[in-house]
Image (cartoon, rainbow, N blue to C red; front, side):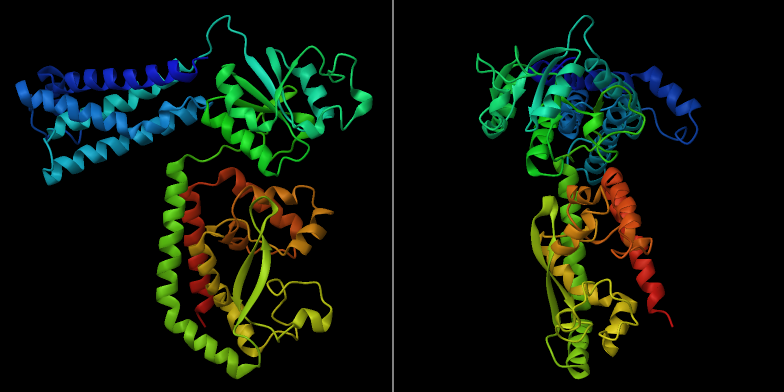
Length: 468
């Protein structure tokens, strides 16, 4: 398929050319007459045909804003057809809104309303078709494939399943024959990987993708929940390379349920920078607004906690973050000081029930209303947490739960959250099998709008709990 600079050139020039053609069509008298006469809802618009300098300004402005709005589409990422179509249409709508805003405030040359509406409609059809067309496989071309990983046994299995042109493999030195002396061959190769080149270590992923114009990368890591796996996966999406794994060495959170064959596509796709920006902006606004609004209430809660029992106002504990790292979280103390140490209990403060004798009188109210979680807005503001994501557990509890819940570590694929899909469905860490089902569902479906829906549901739950 079309990759690299060839794709980038085709995408940009195609967008510019199709946008200019769409403006000329939308500006023509006959299409405008038909549109404003026979299309319901728009039959009250006036026919306005631009000429001369006005037309040239309209052309340049439309082409510029369309090219800028579609910047995410210029990277040749291996998107499914429907994903490419929907993302292109979303960006076209952003462009249309920008042009309408400029016209409304008269910051620049104003496009006639009929021309703007027709232009947006035409681009919603032709630009998705263009991006799908330029990514179609070239007839007769064999996929150029490399293997990237640190598990030699898995890499040997993957080699047998590769149908395309296998160019070589990337593997850290520690995983090569020096770590498995019995696997070394006389010529310095590795048993099961002979006759293919060792292209270097994992740090060379991006260089090799560009140098060899790679089409497909098959990931073969012993653990798919660590930074090396996601670093390679992110490099694949950055350079428009399809990422696959062997179905015998993966799980449902990484791959689609309907996939067939030994090598299957990785379904967990890194977000575009715009998605990260939206999510982080929302997190900052949400946390800052919450801290300001709750400031007077937090002062009252602090006084109530001190009057109810001796000890600190806040409860601090380390929790597991992305890819197994840890960070401190803060909550209003709802139990007697050093409750877990005194009782020898292994259950966390978060999961202790309201009837637990270690819970204070004020603590019962805080738990019922979820107000004990408010200080964690500071962790969201700092960036340790997000407003939405799997709730973080204590590292020691994570280790215990992993022995009984196979996919538990896959929660680490995303940043932990103040609330999550499990929480709005009233599932806690005391039910790990049920909790992981919701957490993995979130990992697959995460998006800014999905986060917004979860936040709204959580706010509604808190409001209902506050009612008598």
